Image (tube, rainbow, N blue to C red):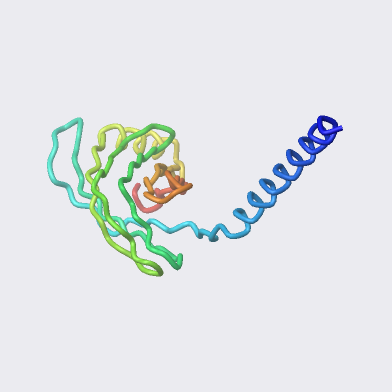
Length: 164
């Protein structure tokens, strides 16, 4: 009789434990703070050296944080493609914090192959194109639990009107 009671109580405990775990997981997802994606924009570009094939630029970015908590950034990587070819890339491993509901400027070194970019540009101009497509992609490394990388990808086109 005691054995029969123990056997019937074990599945009930297991089921109760499983239900409690599921309720806890659901509560965690409801309590997780909402996160609005920050915006990243280029503020300035300065040529700092290079040669015919490779140029080094200091690019100043601005990141705006619309969230109600600070955003600790531990690094950033980015690449620029023009006409389907990668022409620039860079990485910043310096940590900084974007204040809650604020913004901050930071510099990043970018290595570029302007000869390739100019070749693509000249090719598009020879085709009498009105524009050339570009895309910037990368990710900011965020030092928050459950949010490691914050990817970004922007596409657009450079107007070639008035360059002929």
